[in-house]
Length: 160
Image 1 (tube, rainbow, N blue to C red):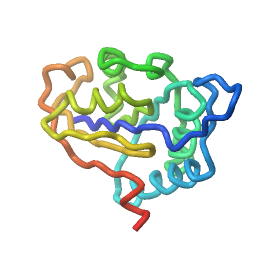
Image 2 (cartoon, helix red, strand yellow):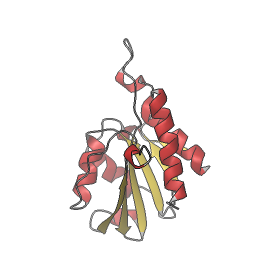
Image 3 (cartoon, rainbow, N blue to C red):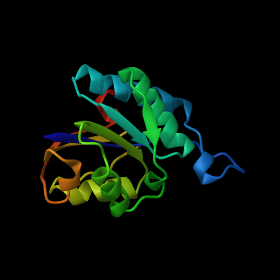
């Protein structure tokens, strides 16, 4: 069994004269990303590998999560402005020694990909996380593997 987590970047700013790729997180985005990382850790969600879009807002979100879990992270350019195939191709290439991975990316691509996996429909808000159990031993078998929805968390879970 493998576990796949899809994480939408945290709340970002839209400063003038800044390209989309370089948009930073807002102060609230930084708070929410840290809280969501802690929320997952408190629920014993295991994440062995963190892979992020290189865009500033996604990468900073990933950095905050990886700090909570005390794990390193990597980037993959295909997670910026992604299509479903971008996620699939990245997943197929994962090392089989990795049993749980979190991918940090952007809407609409990340929500579209999430909704292609099971009958559970999610629209990932900023800092939203959705988890799936993938019934396979090798990531290369991802496409045909049975996928089971595990959870969906958003900042609303801890802003009550």
